[in-house]
Image (tube, rainbow, N blue to C red; front, side, top):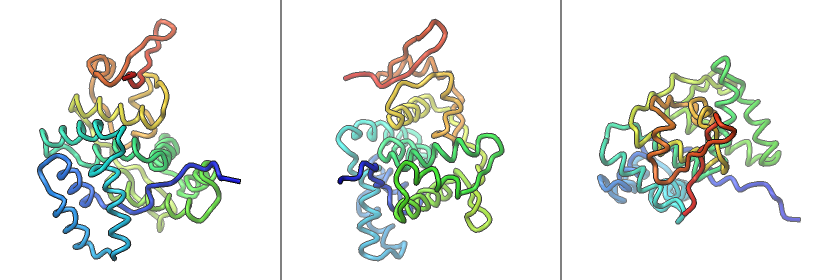
Length: 239
């Protein structure tokens, strides 16, 4: 019998420095040779470099066909403003590309929403409910948590037993906010209430400090629709 558990995909710790170099290559301000060099300098073995490069490919260098144009627009934001946090753009690509990464982010965001921290065991327990009670699920959840920590979203304390949400990054770039919202909608795979976007768990490391409904109405890739008179929903625009 074939398992229906979703594939994990994001199976490596990804350092922010590595993914930033990959983003620069996508944006035309860096090169594939620089990607190769930074991985070699990290001291990774041949197999580890290969697997890490696979993740970097999916995030920025060779995204899936349906995400290539989305990646291009993210890279364009970085090209126009190199000081813009690479972590925010990579977060958008990661949640759009890897449902596993997005689910970990969503759980951390939800579990830390009230008190700012949670037990990592609770994240592991809930991930195993979705992806199966197996060693791979536990290990790869740790890889995602380690990556999110390195990207500045959270801190792992008490030898990794607790996760503490760090101060969120306030985003004021209109294009980036709309793009990140699109990444979240792609991850969720359904229409999302505009009123919930400011506190969407999967985007927990960021404050979207812009007029969201207006930005969505100006975006060619998103549709804004009213439901029940007062509730506005955002969804991907059909091609």
